[in-house]
Length: 254
Image 1 (cartoon, helix red, strand yellow):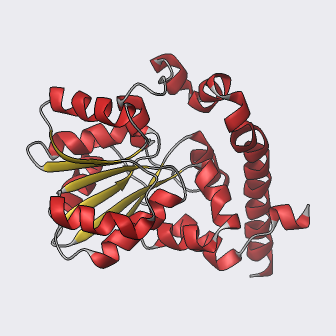
Image 2 (tube, helix red, strand yellow):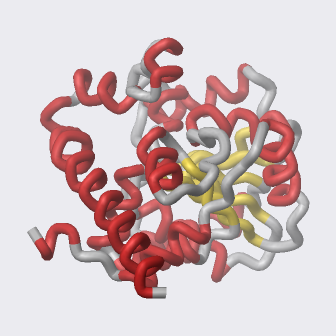
């Protein structure tokens, strides 16, 4: 159990401190507008309970989050983490809800979708085109990471939605940030391309408002998501409690 709960303290604390906790919708718009106005490649990542767990298993993934320009809180788990540590968690910046907000601000810009597979990729592109977006590139999510660079250099998109799942999309976003020399917002979007392409069904609004969309997804894909949500949530809760105990111990010894 000690190995299961082991905390790489500097990395964990760095991740917790890195997250941009957003106060309201206006502050979210400000972040997205800053990203769109950047003079170079800019990475927007999201952290949920699953991503927090992955940081313990993969140093490369944790480093990718730390090297993102913006790291946004996604879901009830991370909200609980900050409340447990007596910090204001800000609003929920779930990528599936806030990426459309970003695209609305980027109306008219060149959009790329990278991730998932056909026919869902094209269906997602068609969905965005129907909403008036200028989709200039689609690419499935199964190429090796270096193979995406010439594709990106040729298409020159302004906004790239990555939908490969963690941790590949985060690793790709940092690779592209380091290699590209033109402005581009790289967004780690998780399952959003699958939602747009109707591969995955989104939970009803009342389920999302309760903060239990993970349970809806688990019901749809129990075999694939059991480890992430059942085992993963238990591990996450234990890690949160361990972090709280460490914080209290540090205060007592101060």
